[in-house]
Every structure is written in C-alpha cells, then in structure tokens.
Length: 273
Image 1 (cartoon, rainbow, N blue to C red):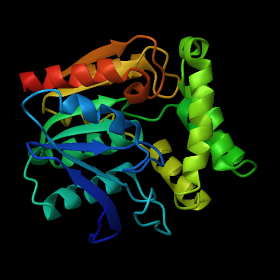
Image 2: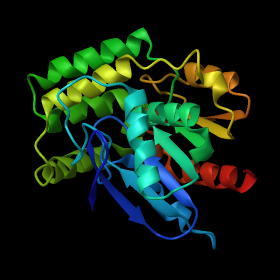
Image 3: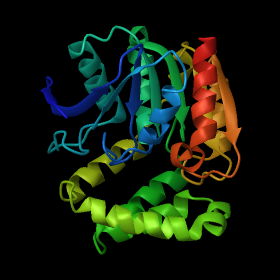
C-alpha cells in the first residue's frame, strides 16, 4: 500500500475497486490491514453497483506517522480531508467505526461538501466518564502485558456474552491467529496508543453535532459498553437527517460481530441517498 505525504503527516492508504468513492475510517489503533470494516467489503460487491473503497491508517496507527505531540479527533479529520483532496475525491460515502466514527463526525461538520452520506458505527458524540476510565485502564494494562494478551481483554469488554457462549472455540482460535499476525505488523507503540486514547477521551461534538445535515445512519450494538446504544441514539436525534438502528446480539464492533446485517443496512441506506 502506498504512503502519501500530507502537510502534517505521512499517511498509509489503500484504494481498491471502481465506482463511487466509499471511505472506511478504522477505529482505535486499527489500520487499513487490521480494521474490522474490511469484513464489509464482500457486501459492496454483491450488486451491479460497485464502489471504490478507500481505507487508510489514521495518524498514530499502522504505517502512518507517529507524531510526538497530542492531537484531537478533529485534527485527524483534517488528515482524512487532505487525503481525499490529494486523491481528487470530491464527494464520498463515509463509514466510520468507533474512533473512526468520531473522526467522521468532524469530517462531516467541517467538510460537509466531501460527505455524500455518513454511517456512524459504534459511535457517541462525546466521551463519557465510563469510556474515559476504560481508556485509562487499557493504557495501564498495556504497561504490564503485551498487545496480543491485551487484545483478549478488549474482546471480553467488546463482545457480548451471547457470542462468547455461541462461538467460544472460534473466538479462541481467532485470538491465536491474531497473535501470529501481530508478528508481521509494526511493533506496538505505547506512546502512539496513549495519544490516540487521549484524542478519544477529549472527543466532544455535542455542541456541533446538530450541524451534521447530510444523510446519516447511526448503528449501535445492543450490548455496547464502550459507546452505549442510548447515547448513540441520542446523538442521532440531534442530527436533522439521521436515523438510528439498534443491532441485537452485538457489542462494540458491529462490523465483525454482525457483519451481514451491517452490510445490508449500509447498502439499503445507500440506495436511499
């Protein structure tokens, strides 16, 4: 995948396919390679209308720049806007997950001309106290355990108990495969991770989210502890052109936990905009 030099960082990205631009913005410390949003790709090849999928590593993630100063989700949205400008993308469908959805909020607020429609998955408009405390705890745990073992803790917090009961053996196998895959990725960067957590903890679009007037779909898992569904639904109610869908038997990470349902929801939504 190519890396492009922007005004403040170098950004690793991938462009695949032909058709209307569809931008995937990954979550915390996820990259173009590891993002759960990649699971959705087959659903955008189901119909005659295909998409040009654009996905990248946000600053601090993957192969993109690890800066030596704090930054915000709004700063990260500027990186993505600049990437779209360099790629000569005038307007795109935007899908953001978790931290990526926070970046997408600012992209829609500050650069609405670039956003044809917006899908916010695992999302809230402002980091609540539970999320802030969770991020603090995750950073503390990472000082004592390696990233692969830490990921098991994240899965426990993000997956609903129903999926653990139903797919325990598969989850255990995936965790082992993930540990093997981490060996081929850049070494875990504790400082970069902490800066990303700080950006999420400081995220607050509550006074601006009403300015998102593009067609928007907010999707939340019914067992999401990280970005609780009631807060996501309340956020949707603040946007004049937004709808809300609650996905059952899903925690934080709908794209991986209920991939087919999310893929169909997005396709149906795109048919209407």
